[in-house]
Image 1 (tube, helix red, strand yellow):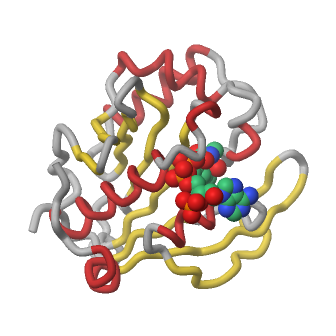
Image 2: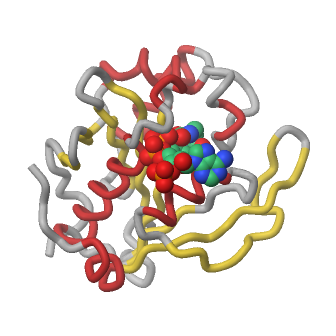
Length: 194
Ligand SMILES: CC(C)(COP(=O)(O)OP(=O)(O)OC[C@H]1O[C@@H](n2cnc3c(N)ncnc32)[C@H](O)[C@@H]1OP(=O)(O)O)[C@@H](O)C(=O)NCCC(=O)NCCS
């Protein structure tokens, strides 16, 4: 089974596709990360990002050794957001873990099913084409929409991480949510969608 470094050119689920980020995506990233409706949901973003920050943000994925990846989520019309994927670099004991972060950066595209489809596409690829055994994410407890979507696509709540995040001068609790390969494939199947 391939490691996560073998990245496909395109992953599809329904009307959504995921493709690796490129430098040409920087204007989208800049807009998304500075959108006042998006910023409160995105950890670490209590300040707007400048042009140089958005370039550095994209470049860190392009220069990664394969342990850090970013996919752009494409609706049939346009890029609408991104998914980050990270695993411990070169660590054999924890190499089976992948952490996921997702952001639909266009608020007008929220709640159209793109986030759910993108996560199903990513999990299907991770669990059928790579050696990832456990995929997890850590939404803030207050992010009820994200938690609902994560449960819908097969992540299970495992517990509360108290004061896991510091943002806007406050600590926030987060929920540890994970999907395991065998459980997820039993529920969602491994068949690819065209
Ligand atoms: C969270 C996010 C990825 C979800 O993607 P999306 O495309 O908007 O979500 P979908 O359209 O696939 O699904 C929305 C679901 O949430 C439900 N929902 C909406 N608001 C909700 C709320 N306040 N509480 C619970 N469920 C809610 C909808 O009813 C729908 O559920 P259904 O499909 O069972 O009817 C996206 O909204 C987003 O990126 N938001 C901003 C950044 C963010 O929060 N990122 C996650 C950080 S952990």
